[in-house]
Image 1 (tube, rainbow, N blue to C red):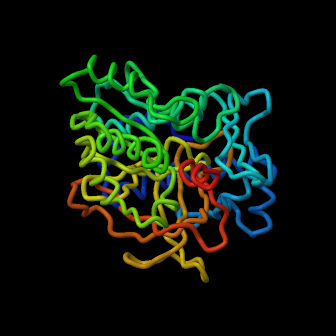
Image 2: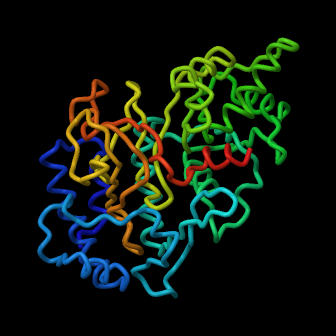
Length: 364
């Protein structure tokens, strides 16, 4: 299998369709053979489907696993003694959670890939960072939840990391004031999950502004947020309304949503300045017809399949999600980044709620 360090030398949005297909075929077909050899469950599933990994020619022909399968089976392609970390998905009360087993190599790939992708939006320098969450969420360093893993992953881009909320999810005004005074005039990074930002940060800032005129200037901030929109969409809060509300209350306008999942940590799909989610060279999306599972054309709604070049310790390189989306184009986004770009429609009907923002909103 091609050494992953070679892949990290390539700029994340630099390959056109033909170049990227060759690159993905090389890596993903090798991963398929690797997992068929080292994961018994995966080998059995390929056998049942009549798929010989040696005969698959293109990465979009690789059988996809439903993401829900990681809640039912312990899927790993390395010996137990090599497991370095176990990650779990978000879930509402009573839901089973996905378990993702990482060896040190795969964990390292995740971290390095995240850095390559996100640095394209934040710049190469680490920035003073506000985390719009509470500090208690990152307690267990061995059994990471998706929410904790998200915070720790994006914390790599920050210095002087400050939690804006206390453990009761109330805004810590003193900590926010101290941070902004210390970093006055500097570019800063903010990270959080969409519903929590709206419910516990935006609404608190709005109330402070309305009651006694207290305001905070976050106009030099870059906000990265994710975890789902289900609750906010139900309250008629669109992505534009979300950004405009933050701009109005604290001057924050540089806002980027992202799409990602614990089953493919590291391969996030960042939202560009045009409002589009982008695939990088490390990943791809295929929209599949809900009935036939055939690939959809540009502009057609389908179930989202995600592929990732990262997972070596578990067979998570080709997965069918329970989300619907629309492919908007490839290599021609006005932002200038190459690769496919798309938008999320939402969850499939009757699919379990998942995503850090949506599961928290459900409990809330």
